Every structure is written in C-alpha cells, then in structure tokens.
Length: 29
Image (cartoon, rainbow, N blue to C red):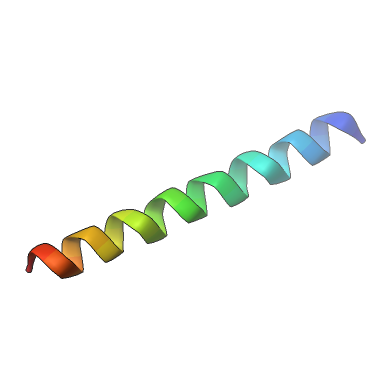
C-alpha cells in the first residue's frame, strides 16, 4: 500500500512539473 501510494505521488508530481514546464515554454514561445 505504502509503496503504491508513494508511486502515485511521484507520478502526479512528475505530471505537475511537466505541465508547469509546458506552460513556461508556451509563454516563452
């Protein structure tokens, strides 16, 4: 359970970071 929850948190964090990066790139372009 703990390992799965931590994995989900990591996946969500990566998605949020990727989304923020895309927003920054869109503003730069």
